[in-house]
Image 1 (cartoon, rainbow, N blue to C red):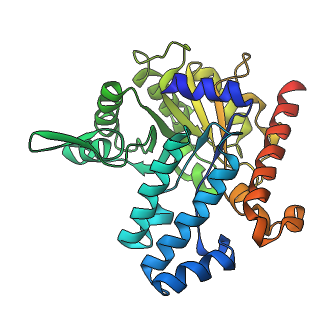
Image 2 (tube, one colour):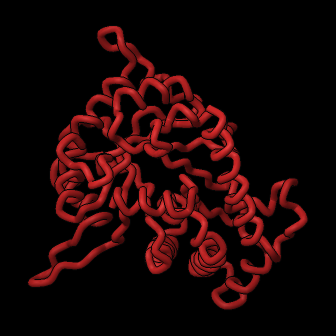
Amino acid sequence: MIDKLISKIKKTQAPIVVGLDPMLKFIPEQIQKKAFAEYGETLQGAGEAIWQYNKEIVDAIYDIVPAVKPQIAMYEQFGLEGVKAFLRTVEYCKSKDLVVIGDIKRGDIGSTSEAYAVGHLGKVQVGGQKFYGFDEDFATINPYMGTDAVAPFVKVCKEEKKGLFILTKTSNPSSGEFQDRLIEGRPLYEWVGEKVAQWGSDFVGESGYSYVGAVVGATYPEQGKILREIMPKSYILVPGYGAQGAKGTDLVHFFNEDGLGAVVNSSRGIIAAWQQEKYKAFGPERFAEASRQAALDMQADIAQALESR
């Protein structure tokens, strides 16, 4: 799957992931009204509004970006109906040949970790049959509990030729409370980066990049430079662009000299672009067109930064 991601990045010239992180406040009134007219102001109505909103955005951007990243908590808050919308979104994105990164941030041990891995990336045994649960192409996971938490995911990924992005240096302001703590004179995120490289050392695609990658926030470009050197063959998923403050010039150290090695996420900066002053002219009726333009602008910003480095 890492080779497919890289192939699509090359084809679109857009090392971009669109974070499908819907909140009702992002969804235009006309979509909410239609969903609530059919299902009422209920969890089912919310799930329908989310699904219709996602579908229009995907239809607008699937040909210009390689991947999407639905964040499962944004769906789980609406209970079963939200999870249904998550599954419909994953299936629809895959029908459009988008790479789907399930932003699930799971991290446990033993049979629990195995169940998470099977549910999101593999097949579950039901009698004499096997079925995919959510069937994402990649998943984000939390390594806090060590190799015991990561190994079941790696095992399933090897079986399914799918991939992982492991939290290494996250974009949030308080990430340093733990991630920057020194251990034998080095910050924790460096030790995690070394383990990421180790976990993926024997699981490499034809592209030369590992199926096991890392999450490193764009808001910490100097740390990104260090981790790029520690993990030369690991793809880096880079959150923090746009709404969290990072811009194209903050991203250059996340990429290798071949122009590959990183894929940058923007969530509300793209899916809620219609609410920004810059894209106000599109209005709520053309919200999906605003998302497309925001993705194109992001592509241009990153390309300019990489060309001038």
